[in-house]
Length: 177
Ligand code: AR6
Image (tube, rainbow, N blue to C red; front, side, top):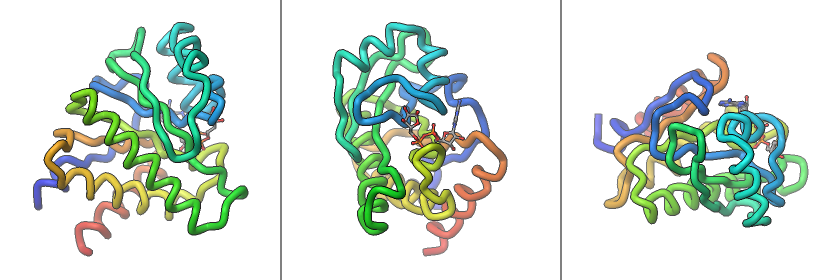
């Protein structure tokens, strides 16, 4: 197993419980605290997180911004905005979703993050099919994990066993590529 693969792991967990330097939030472009993983992260971090998000006020689709983690074990929360599946051409969905992972990892590197966990961005309310989304996530992380400023651990944090299976399959496919 090569170095990039040893840095990528899949877990089934509530992302708010993970002891990592940064967790990634699946936010909306107005950075108004919402439901899904965004709601869970805001609940666990406390009201200061929502205030910090709204002070930033905007994050275009595919881009990323950073706040403190407040009451979370994670020191940072990186907020990124996945594309809504029904609102883009399919090729744009994959490019923008890849940008979410790339821009989050670049921001993490700027802040010296050594361990980072992603939820399955865009595959809840935003409707992106998880079988394809997992491949995009793994490809983007794999490319970054090969670089000089790569974190030591990139975790794909899935909320169900079925979701975790998709990420494990995507990792296995990438390993075989
Ligand atoms: N830990 C890990 N994963 C979770 C958790 C959790 N605690 N809770 C949900 N998930 P979604 P999106 C999974 O809908 O599709 C919000 O309202 C969930 O099962 O949270 O990018 C925002 O404000 C799914 O696999 O994000 C936006 O408006 C994954 O997280 C919008 O939803 C992503 O589902 C973003 O939609």
